[in-house]
Structure formats: C-alpha cells, structure tokens
Length: 162
Length: 162
DNA sequence: CCGCTTTGGTTGTAGATACAAGCATGGGGA
DNA sequence: TCCCCATGCTTGTATCTACAACCAAAGCGG
Image (cartoon, rainbow over all chains, first blue to last red):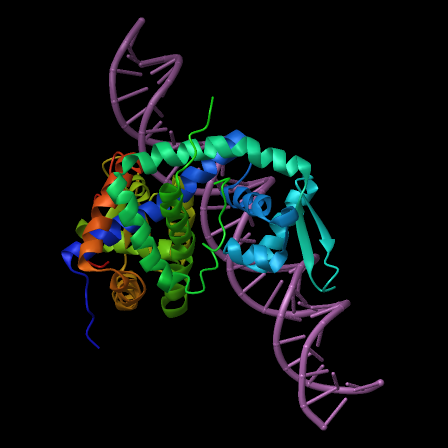
C-alpha cells in the first residue's frame, strides 16, 4: 500500500501546528502555576464549574467538557477538594453519581486567576493575529474539531471566565 | 488594572484552539502507541535523528528541536537505548557532550511507523481542511510561533519522514 | 423479584515528566 | 597556572496521568 506523503505546503502547515500544540500547554501551565498555583487543567476545571448552574456539575459531565478521563478527573477533584476549592457530594437523583461544586474559596481563586490568564492569551496568542486570521482560526478549528471531537463535548460550554 | 476581556470572536477562536491542543496529542500518541509501540515524542525523536547527518545529533540539539527539557530527553533516550533503537556515545570534540545516533533497528522502526502516522495526519487533520485553509494555517502558525518560539528551534528542521 | 448488563465513580499501580541537585568538562581572566 | 563560572548531561525525587481492576447503584428481561 503506497503512502500518500505530505506535499510541501501540507508539511509546512503540519509542522507549525505540531509546534504550537507542543508549546502552548507549557506556556499556559507555567503562567497559571506561577501566578495562581494552578495547572491549566485545574483552572479549566474550576472555570467550568464557575459557569455552571449552582456552580455544580456531575463528574461525568465535567470530564467530557475538559477532555479528561474519569480517573484523572477524580484525582484532580480530590486534590482541589483538599484545598477547599471544590466540594463533592453524592447526587440525590442518582446515587451512583457525584456532584462537584465550586466553593466560595474556589470562586475567589478563579476570579483572581482569570485576568492574568486572559492577559497571557491575548499577549502571546491573539495579539499575534490579524482580525482576519482570528476568523480563519475559528473556521479551521471548527473543521478540525468535526474530526477530533465529533460530539462537540469540549466546545459545548466554555464560559466568560476564559 | 482593568482586564481587557476577550471579544466573542476572539473567544470563539481561542476555545477551538485550546480544544485542538488538548485533543491532538492524545490522538497522535494513541495511533503510534498502538501501531508502533512509540509515543509521539519518541517517534519525533527518532525522526529527527533519521534526518540528521550520520543519523547523529547532540543531546542539546535534539532537545531543542523537540521542545524537550534535557532531563526529559535524557530519560527518553535511555529508554530508546534499552530497546536498541538509539545508541549514545561521548562526543569526541567536546567530552562533556553526548551524541545520540539512530541504530539500524531504529531506522527500521521509523520507516515502518511513518506511513501509518502520515495516514492519520492526513485523514484526521489535513483532509478536513481546504487548500486555502492549509495556507492560512501555515501563516497563522508562523504568526503564533513568532511569539511562542522566537528562536525557531522547533521548526528549524523537521524532515521528510513526517 | 431475581440475575445480568450498563453506568458512574473511586482506588491502586505503573509509567512519564518537571524540577532540583549534582558531576564533569570547557573556557576565560588574574 | 589557578580559580571561577558557564556549559552539557545525568540522576533522584515528587507529581501527574493512563490503564486496569474494582465497587455500588440503576435499568431491564425473565
């Protein structure tokens, strides 16, 4: 079976996409860790909860929105609970389920962390692009996610705090 | 200091970029792990070596091209060496330095892994985009990397095997 | 009502990465 | 020549994630 190798144009685009994918997480983690003692995943988790009704989400729901496996989320929430940023309690409708709720302290942490995070995103990412490129990135993202995330779990809700 | 929050357009683009950044590594790792028992980082490391003169690079050079810290690379190369895919030997010009060289077995592994990897990249990424979007992605990548990787360490050499 | 399967979640273990510390060589300046 | 610092790399430790095993509740067919 012959391989359909990438053309020069395709490879150029792919190389840059891979480079961005490699570099961006480290940048986000470093800033949030330094300024707010949170990983990007922890921040994202808290931000999801901050947007939810009653600041509460079920573990499964939260896991899908953050592209986490359930074990991973369980561990992270346990750590956040130890820091009193989140509290867990059994769901009343379904006794198998667990609800995670953002505490007041957790809310304060998100509110304090958001401006620095947004500033980083603006300075290091969005300000590098023209308005036209921002639109193009939007469309390209949609096209890619149609394949990478057909169910739209990640982009379903991603609120104002980000 | 007032926060300059993101506009709707900016947030839409950012949300999609973050989602892609979260999803893509898992996809690449899963395919390579399943088909070739390699992580994407390991594959990338081997691919860099396969492109280098005499299939040899110094550890520092290799670390920069793959955006790895030196400790990380050291551990990974140690594992690859244990699998006889890479060999290490002290550099003769500078006795502090270590040269990593791709073995024949390592070469075979890269050659065997490349087609499946390229197929995935094509089917799940590039084929989702129009030719015009591929060009746009190229330009957007350049703009972002000017900020994320000013020295161009990652994109300096990324060869035909990819 | 019983038993099977599915769903929701936690825990344990192994593997991988970051960070800090450490060691050896190189490269000047006094 | 001697000292000091920078460079190149390795190792050790703590943390985080993936994977698998596990338990409990829910749903469902008989």
